[in-house]
Amino acid sequence: MRNCLLCIVTMVAVVFSAGSVLAQPDYSFEVLAPSGGNPPGPDGFFGLGATVSQEPVIGVTHLENSLKYQVGVGGFVGARTEIVPPTLNDPPGVLYVLFDLTLPAAYPDTFANIGITVFGHALNLGQFGHQVQFADEVAMAPLGAGTHLNQRIDLDFSLGPYRPGESFNDIFGPGQNDLTVSSAFQFYMNKNVLTPITVYIDNVRFVVPEPGTSGLLSMGALVIVAMRRRRSR
Image 1 (tube, rainbow, N blue to C red):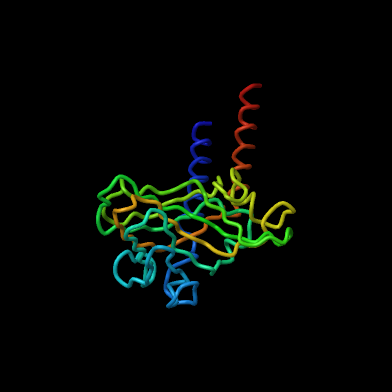
Image 2: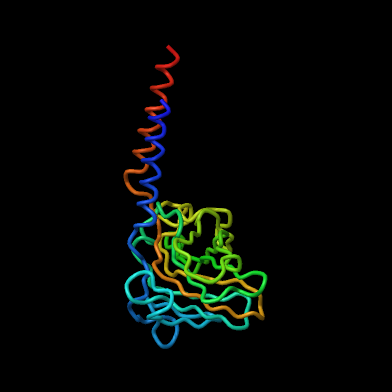
């Protein structure tokens, strides 16, 4: 039984790993596109209290460019785009976001966190411009200089102001109580006000479980139950 359980655990781990790390990027910052800023930005990203640009050298982990996200004096800023990939607009299923993060130098102050906000329209209610900031963040100050692959931000708990306490999949989707459309995506940064920071982001992926994951988990549960019944005879 031990060998069987080990096999099941190994298969589940492989499926989850393949579904996250090997997912195709939703943002890779190769194309300058119209944005809410001027001039156009990489994948339509523009700065809100920050400066964003396409970077061909530093922080590139996929293809040929990364997003340079530069913040001077300011505590809460954003890098936002109205270009929303199909993955983010076909819920439910999106559990978390993976991205590669490069810090050219260690952050010298106490805290600098990066998180995610998704904006959307509740078309069924005739409401527009809802903002959903998620609680999970990546703390950058402890990371130190270098490239940090597969940084993860879970989308399981909204801070609001719209629908606090709910997950992305509770809020977005075709259900009667859900938002119908996600209309914008933002990396926000919350940091010490007077201490600047520059980071580079690449290979952004919205992670949905592989179709085989739920089936594999169900199969594993059935095998365990069957073996327990066999032993109890």
